[in-house]
Length: 164
Image (cartoon, rainbow, N blue to C red; front, top):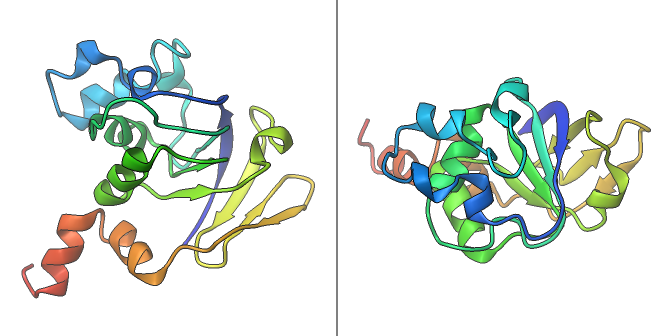
């Protein structure tokens, strides 16, 4: 699974309230969540995203509450994957459960600037920078690739059990 897109760069400790402000938690509609993704952290963010773009961040991305709304908002906004130094555990699980590809890449925050074009290969664990430098990280386990490919845990399980 490979993704190529323009980088939108954020710092450390981006919490779920910054990803999708609490005032929008009255809905689980992906379009509404997408329109308000990162609104308080970076006004106008949702309008600046092109389908397939890549979000890059420092450490502890997705800290805070355990809401699934946060990865849904990112995915629905058109972000193809998130690359961060590290993820909050519950965000990591929620992202995979809803089919949002994410990968931990130590050192990424210091090497990527806003607007850089990146390629992320989950299968091989390689993040390729505009300079051609390749950062090698732990590749996605095959079963997790399957979950992401199917669009999340529930579609994956239904397919595994022949319910489609």
